[in-house]
Length: 253
Image (cartoon, rainbow, N blue to C red):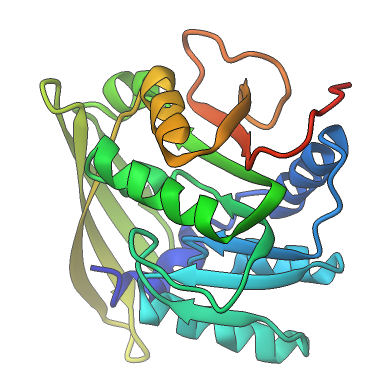
């Protein structure tokens, strides 16, 4: 998984407004009276958000399980002239040399965890390396999105250089959706090469997330709709969570 996916990933996410996502993160820092210097991004992929935050003056560490994704991230960093530390590790079992001021995990990376136990493993490591009072901001595809929007659906996209077909299978008992991706990518000779990827996402309820945070020693500070600070509704497709390592009492605005 991810070896060929890294080559096409940025084309697939080109419509994601990373600047808007970074604005949201900075609004969250302001809302909770935080001014982080060093930020760890779990599941940083090809480094789009890592680089965006670096450009805004934050010291960044990007961590991802895919060496191929990190290679793309490193190329972008060299081209930008910035300095970012990238680490090739699994977020379920990572090690840092010291603490960080904030941790982020975006674009439903945590949905790739296979169980609440794996989620809790991640949360415990976040607690281990997060400075007291520091924020942990992450998002999840909601159970509604995984079951009703992704569900047993087929998606496709046609363009000149890449065509992809995305076939989903939803297991209601396990609350998992399996994503079968088939790509046809145009090579230098003008021919199309096919490759296939299989991904899987798990749906987690807010109560499961809260329990996992509690058991990891983190405190849930807020649950919000997509890029907002309003409570999510029943049809919210992406849910944002903000937690912190206990030390301070926040005066929420």
